Length: 136
Image (cartoon, rainbow, N blue to C red; front, side):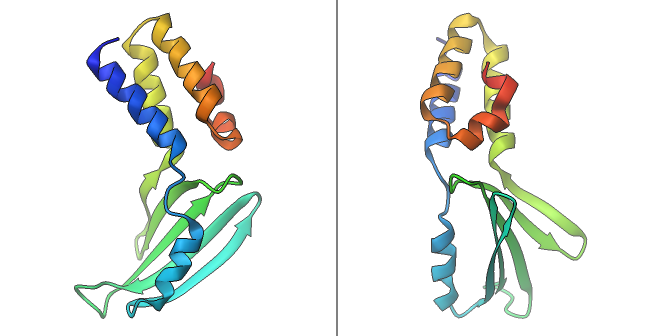
């Protein structure tokens, strides 16, 4: 396997195993002086955490973020809410799709089989559903 393919496989495995910032850890930030509010809610099977805090460098500027967690407790998306709309800071499923597609196009059935095996072994049920056809 080529070096870049090995790096992508390692990146895929690491991402599948990493749940991201736990939702409870966001709540613990409320003790920080610049935090204004943290609100938890549900949307279907997702947990949504909306957080407002003052910018550390510009205390008069309020920052607003939305964190979305899947039913397995994995952080799947981080968005910054601005006056102009939503800016996606990070998207787990987009990152997973990107890595899987890059691996699948980088070479042969050996890599495709390894990707399918890694997803089968390490992906949460939510990840498997989201990756769907790509995992096959």
